[in-house]
Image 1 (cartoon, rainbow, N blue to C red):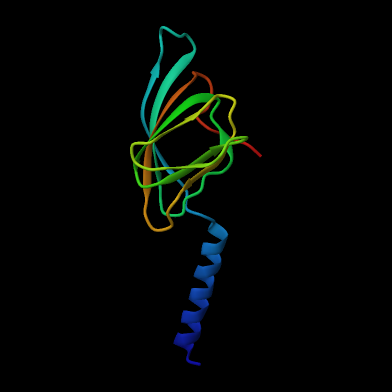
Image 2 (image 1 turned 90 degrees about the vertical axis):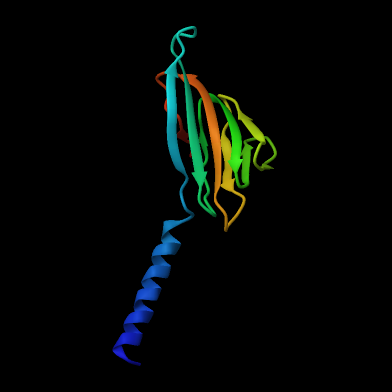
Length: 133
């Protein structure tokens, strides 16, 4: 075996190992607006977009907020503890309450990206997302 071929095989093995350790692709969140609601002291309205690359999966989390999801592109799978998972396509919506644990959040496709808009009503001092272990 030539040195070049050995080096190539070694690099492919390292790349495959690194990809296996990275896990699924992560979502990309873009904040669009945060507005304190003066009629509701201590409450904020927050609007974000979430882009799922192909194969992206969210960790189990909660929002401690009312979360209204509107799918813009692609197809996503959403679910909360105690409920059924649903597959959503452009124009469809999903709701999460402040006490819900978001157990399923992922791109339904391994080849196409997905994008959705999220409108959150939350306490001003609360984070947008809290991981649940």
